[in-house]
Image (cartoon, rainbow, N blue to C red; front, side, top):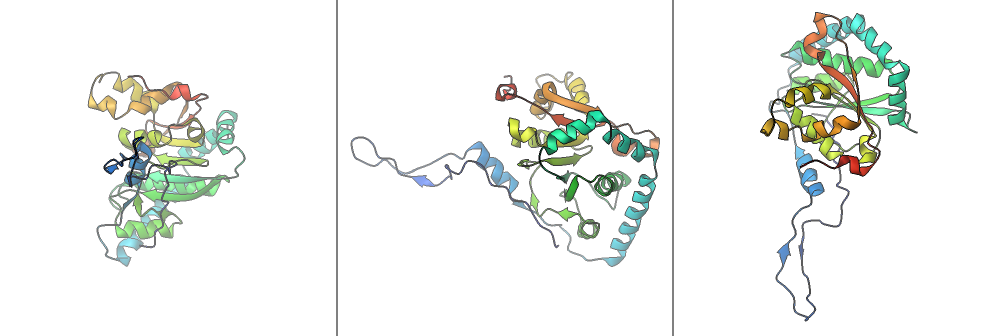
Length: 282
């Protein structure tokens, strides 16, 4: 697989997990003790899980069939009222101002797609990928597209690359740090993946660089209020905490053709002003 990866480096370089020797005031050396890894190091280790498709078969017939399905899907979506309405929404002053705030002095933001699912098996992932590609073609400030899902086959990987996407060879578990403006395209991912993304970027400067397309945080808040003191709430700690500084704009599905792929999806922009806003309630 001709894939590339973005391997991130934790900000804290001072604690590297090596054995250290500490001298006491009386001049003797204490026994070597390992330092515990920092949270940043733990996240970095989780980010650096090598990945490759479990099947290595190159099947040109399967690739051709999938590419044909994708071309049909993109053509259908491009002519749909759903897509035209979405482009209109992106062009509204309200959303334009949000995008410009995230872009700041940059001319483009790359897109990272997590959890796309099996393109060969289901139509919804094909529609979601088609939307991402069409957005890149029609919106001048959207840059390169990177994709990851552990279920991707070798055939799906080759088709993604043929469509101009880069398939990551590292399972980041959703923990990409937004060191520059970035769009995370994550329709219908699990709450834990959104929470991983927020946890990795739980700083004012980083959150300000993120545009998230994914499940409505407002809906999460409404539903999770029914599950107090449960593991379900724990998996969405930062989703709930982020609600107070999130600007959310619903994406209208318009027709039943696109409901399964995009229902309850929103644009999310994060705007905490002070670090104190990021303190989590106990």
